[in-house]
Image (cartoon, rainbow, N blue to C red):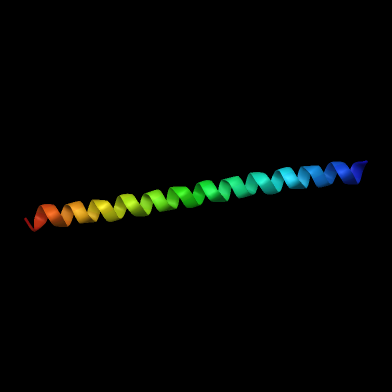
Length: 48
């Protein structure tokens, strides 16, 4: 019984960690997009 319980907890923890990493990756992607578009806009503004 104890081993089964621990296995379930490990699965939950693994899912939780996977969720966190995917969230982190999404945030990084958004940040990259924002910064790249920011620089594009800046260059457009400067070199009109």
